[in-house]
Image 1 (tube, rainbow, N blue to C red):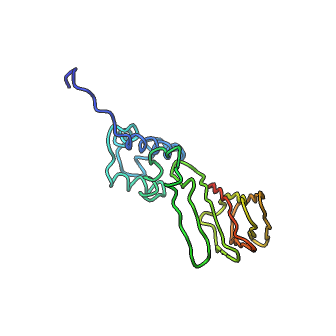
Image 2 (tube, rainbow, N blue to C red):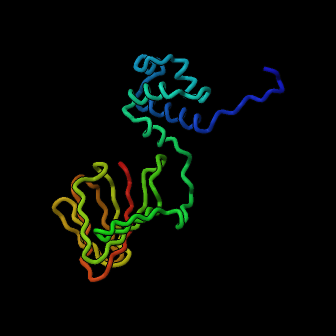
Image 3 (tube, one colour):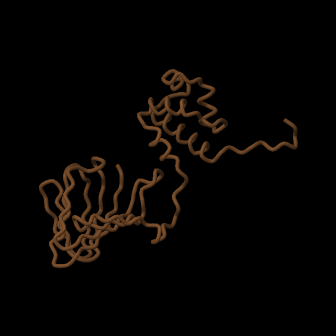
Length: 194
């Protein structure tokens, strides 16, 4: 290469992917040689991918995902760009379950680089939501009632919450959210993945 030719900088996605691959290998306690044996990928190719000197192929990523017990979608979501520090109200997704009277606003949506999220929930008077299991066992939840009354059942225990009350728990089994009335309830749900 001539002296006046600039060395191209690595793609930012490849840099984040390489860093994540190093984290995964280190978490398993494997050397590059051990990973090469497990995947059938040469040590030098693995090293170049971890240092973002090359962009890994789909085939290479598939082999790595197999040994790390992940789907490719999972791996790629883990390296998304840093989340935006501000989530504008207009950009917060609102979903409504008209049949149950539940409205859910994703105030701080989930992101591969973050463990927590914030949700604003609204239940109309008389609404009753039952979940047969948590999406992730051991999910940490903090439920803060802003306005109204909320009954939350976790396991065999029903918690009666009013304005300003906060329930903190880890969810291992079924849960139930009920609005006994007379008015609607509005609450914040902070969710933290284990």
